[in-house]
Each structure stands twice: as structure tokens, then as C-alpha cells.
Length: 84
Image 1 (tube, rainbow, N blue to C red):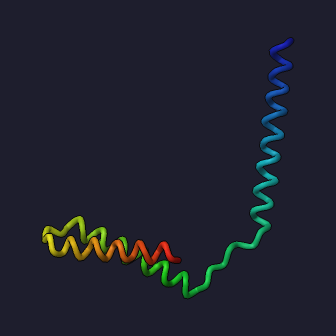
Image 2: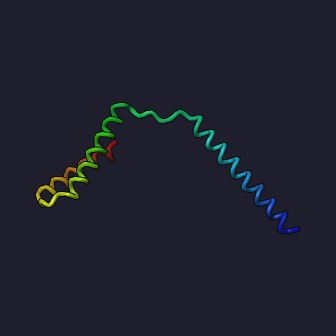
Image 3: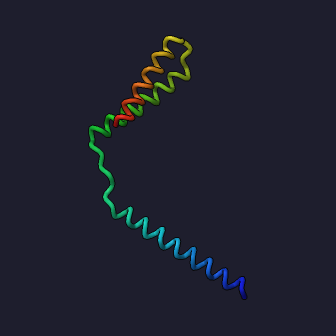
């Protein structure tokens, strides 16, 4: 009988945890989503796309001069992203 009682206690604990999780989900859903400034969103999207393009270029570039240029551009974009 001891094992059956422990199973019920475990089930009750899991049930309470699930209730707490659902309550937290409801609270999060009730909060209005963070709205970023549209201009800031545009800049963020632009920098992210530029970064992806530069990384793609880096994979296919063999010129050491171009690699240095790409590295400088990537570090500049990283700096600008950190500033946002």
C-alpha cells in the first residue's frame, strides 16, 4: 500500500506543477507583447540580413584582402547590433 500512496502523492505533485505552468502561461499571454520601434525593427532586420550575407561571402572567398574586409564589416555589424 505504501507504493500506491506514493504514486498518488507523485501524481498530485505533477498535477500541481502543471497547474502552476498553465497559470504562468496565462499570465504571459495576458501581457501585451513588446512592441519595438518600427525603425529599430527595420535596422535590426537589415543588419541581420547583412551579417548573414557577409558570413556566406566569407565561406566562398579566397582573397585575403576580401577576407579582411569582410571581417571588418562583420565586426562593425556586431558592434551596431550590440548598440541596439
